[in-house]
Length: 629
Image 1 (cartoon, rainbow, N blue to C red):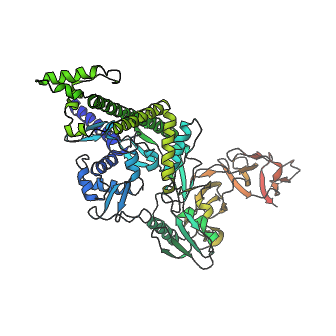
Image 2: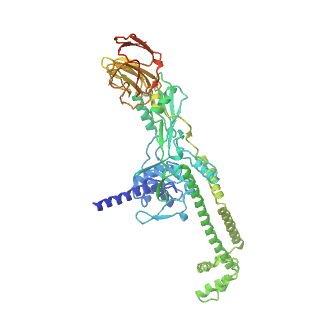
Image 3: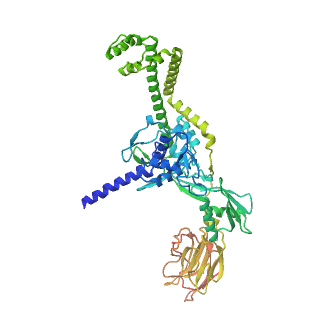
């Protein structure tokens, strides 16, 4: 048994780790899930500026991704519809209507110019073996963009999940610039479907966001939905409106969907219903308003970590500095190699060192002659001359020597030297260099990425307030039934979202949802909406002593559908009133030496207590009857 338990424990941990790291949770370094990274890497490998069949890209990507072609195709379409890193040609579906993309054999894609410019550099990319060991794939891409927050992500792993909302790419880079300059910054979500968002509870990426559709209410008899809340489609919106209409929450004459490139859902209102009376109900009872809870979980240093938006921007900015520094050093090393080779070539040709090898009869002698000829120019050569350098010089063809242009060579060497000087300056001021890089990208692409979602503050609509009170709550005193499907006296106009307080003649009370038909009591004393400020006054009698008591209270706390008692046990409830000006007159049972047989009390003279508190004894006399006026 212990052996079996160990197998289960080991296999479960390996499975959980794999799902978390290699399937569901994006990496903070490049903001991508493994399938997205493999798709972009495949597109980079085959990139020639032309469109490629998506089916071909899916096939190529399968050598990196071991989970089948369907998952790759779906991920590619979803990534393409972000309109950031993949150019598309053909029907990639519609994010507004929810229509799916055409089959992968019919649609085409390629890397966008932004992706080519800012996502790839194989020379500074760390690679690892693919799942079958036949290929090499990137661990993370050296992305110079805040990909994680610009794309957003959603994934469910073993025991954890992530939901990251998309943000505006330009605003994110502006936040990076602010961070690098030491200035404060804030960024908030921006959705491709537009609409409104209330980010008052966003909590830096780990709270929630309220979302609303943009409604055109200029016509008093119709409402047009122009933009959608994130996560909804025109189909889901229309279905929710139709469902609300069937349940009597809305009065709609008809719905037409004219959505194409832009959202346009026309809602025609019923006769006698106007736009301003319907807006709150649309937000309360349909998908025109929704909320999104967010949890910014990422893979960082090979572990799942919950971060904030601010921390991610700081991390991405610091990583960008390191990537640009690595690229500058790589370019510097290449230029120094090139300058070294150009210097050796110049000395070799201009000083006719090649002439010294004419008298040599062995390969060793030829090499030694070149080394000897270069020695006197060591002050011009910045590094040690190697055997490989000499072999390179000896492979220069005669034609190139005869056509050697001294001025052109000097110009090239000067350009290299000038560029090396620029690189040295950039490395010395790497933060300023990073800021300049970001500002260049912002200027180049800002017109392509405007903010689409308007940030406003709005209060979530209470469905009880928005519901139309078009039901009649009735009570049949002969049967004791209460509800909007009961035949009897009408008590209230209600909606199905209302709650009512019911007080029975036995002294019990409860707060209930408006029922269709519910037995409450043949002697119901009170039924109305819950009002926590309303003061009740009750007169009850102790069954053992027959003494009268009064109690004043408010019903401020309750559990729905739970029964409570107003009067103590072994007591009989006599009267209940909400009139604070009421006067109670009590007649006492005649007894020897009892002179006063009647006494009046003003209700307002007694203190208001809690509903669980005991009442105040009005007299130490046995009660016969009472009147209230």
